[in-house]
Amino acid sequence: MNDEAALAKAELRQLDADFNNEINKDKWTVVQFNPETLKVAFANQLATPNGAGDQRGTPARQFVGAGTTKLSVQLWFDATAPLPPGALPDGQTSTDDVRKLTQRVAYFITPVSNNANPPQFVPPAVRFLWGSFQFDGIVESMEESLEFFSRQGRPLRASVTLSISQQKITEFAFRDTGQAAAGGAGSSTPGTRPLTQAPAGSTMQGLASSQGRGSEWKAIAAANNIENPRLLAPGQLIDFNVRRS
Image 1 (spheres, rainbow, N blue to C red):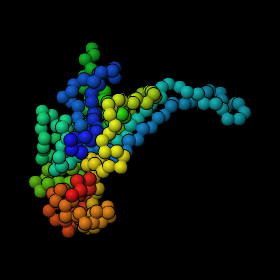
Image 2 (cartoon, helix red, strand yellow):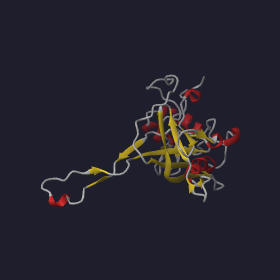
Image 3 (cartoon, helix red, strand yellow):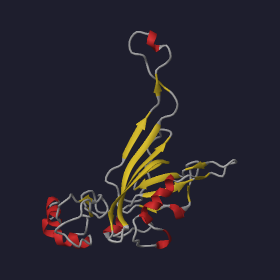
Image 4 (cartoon, one colour):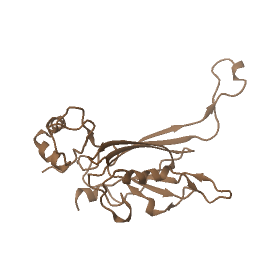
């Protein structure tokens, strides 16, 4: 089994309206590059009781209403890089437009009818999975940045920032992964880190040297399909997680 097959990939799965069961498997999507970090924020709604201003000392604050939990995550997509199974529907393995990948994520922020009478439109409930990490909620916001275009004007690389929230604070969910991840904590596997953005005026050799891989710059350039390694396009994304020879 190769490294890519053994790597646990983050996923987005649709849930039913009660957040109990996973549904519509054709809408699930597997991320291309695992995020570097996940940020989870918890908040309680607090209020100072009426009349507290007449009391001496610091008035006690009381919990009112429900708490909230929010997950913030940034995902990267690259139409020129290999796609994991499940990144596109119907077994597709390639695309020439990165928005064919990001539209799979945008599905989870698009309101759909909940079949009520009269009908109400709400975004689908979503489950974010990555190994043992699980977070259920509603996509609150999505920001897409198109990072690199082909000569024909097709967007090839993009980053998507998602904010997923739930209107409660619950115990952490630990999903059973079945077995320990292959490779161990010290392994360097493609997809475990986001891509590196090239500054204006940078070269492939200089960037590779800054990553401690100066002698491998030609192989890295070839793996990233870079035509001119002597002058990288500003903002160009480089995958330094290519297999070492």
